[in-house]
Length: 504
Image 1 (cartoon, rainbow, N blue to C red):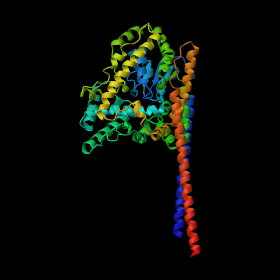
Image 2: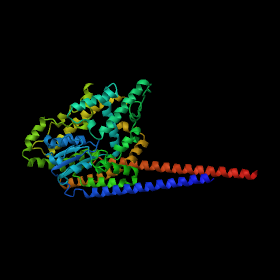
Image 3: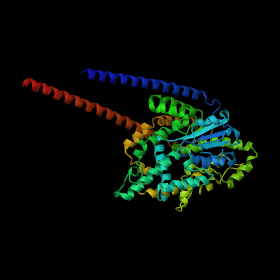
Image 4: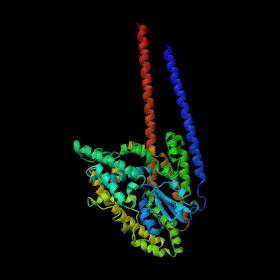
C-alpha cells in the first residue's frame, strides 16, 4: 500500500514538472512570436502603395498561375537586362548592388531584408487554398513522373546531378518548394513502380478516383497527412507572406515556425502579419478571377511600367534585344527536367518558352496592346502546358488528374485540407476584400470592369467550411452519445449486480 502511494506521488510530481515545462515553453514561444510580429508590423512600407517604385518584387506563391504573369506580362514589360540574375533561385547577391528592376521568385517575404524598401513595390497572386493544395500535389507528381524514363532511382538521380553540373540554367530541383517536393515524390513513384513489378496489380475497371490509386502514385490523403506537406504546403501562402517558410532568410524563422506549430493558438500573429503585408502591396491577383485580375494588372501595374520605360530612352535597344535573346532563367513551373525529356523524345524544358516571350513590348506599347498580347500568350501557354502534362502523366496511367476527377475525392479529404489550411482560408478571404477595393479603384478611374468570376468559388469554399463544421458537430455529438451510452450501460450493469447480491 505504501509503495502504491509513493508511486502515485511520483507520477503526480512528474506531471507537475512536465506541466511547468510546458507553461515555460509556451511563455517563451509567445514572447518570441509577439516580438517578431511587433517588429514585422513596424517594418511596413508606409509610402503610397499604388505608385510603382523603381524596383518590382513579384512574390510568387506556388501554383497560383504566377508563371502566366511572368511569361505573358512581366517578360513583355521588362527587358532581360532589367531582371535580377537567377530569379526563382534563392539569391546569393545583394540586389542593391545591381541595376535590376524586376525580381520574380518563390522566395518568401524575408527577401525584403535584401531589398531597398523605400524603392520597392510588391505584387502577388493568391488562390483558393483547396485548389492550391490539389495543384501542388498534381504538379509534384507530374514533374516527378518525368524521371520514370530511367530504369531505376539511382540512374535518375545520377543523371540529374550530371546535367546540373553542366547547366547554367535554373532547374525545378533548384527552386523552393520543388527542390523538396519533387525528389520526395520521385522516390515514392519509383518505389511503387518496383512494387508493381513483383506483385499482381488489381485490374482498373470503370470510373476510378485517380487521387487514390496507391499502386501507381501516392494517394492524395497520404500526401496531405505527410509531415512534408505540413512543413511546406499547408498554410503555405500565409507563411510565405510572413517570411517564415523553411527557405526564409530570417535567422529566427525556424524557431518561430516550430513555436507556432507547437502552440496553434499563436498562429493568429502570423496571420495578422501576412494580412498587413497584403494591405501594403501594389497589386493582388486572384487565380479564380484571372480575367479581371489581368485587366487590373494591366491598368494598375502595366501602365506604370510602360510610363517608366518611356522615361528611359535607352531602354528601346534593350527591349529589341529581348525579342531575340534568351534568358538563363527557365521557369520552374514550365515543368520538369529537360535532360529526362530528351531521352524519350518528349518536349524539353523551355523548348517552347522562347516563342511565348518573343512578342515583347516596344516604345509604342499601350495597355490595350498589352492585354491583347497577354491573351495570345496565355492561349499558347495553356496548349504547351496541357501537352507536357499529358505526356508526363502517361507514365503513371491510368492515374490522370483533371478538374472533373477532383469531384471524386471524398468530402472527408476536402474537409481535412480546409482544416489544415485555416490560416490560408482567412488570408484568401482578406485578399478577396482587397481585390474588390482594387476593382472599385479601377472603376473610379474610368477603367472597364470585367464580370467577376469568383462568386462561385467563395460560396463553394464557405459551403465546404459549413459542411466541415456540420461534420465536426456530428462527430462531437456522436462521441457524447457514445460516452453517455457507456455510462448508462455501466450504471445498469452495476445496479443489476447489486440487486442480485441483495437477493442472494
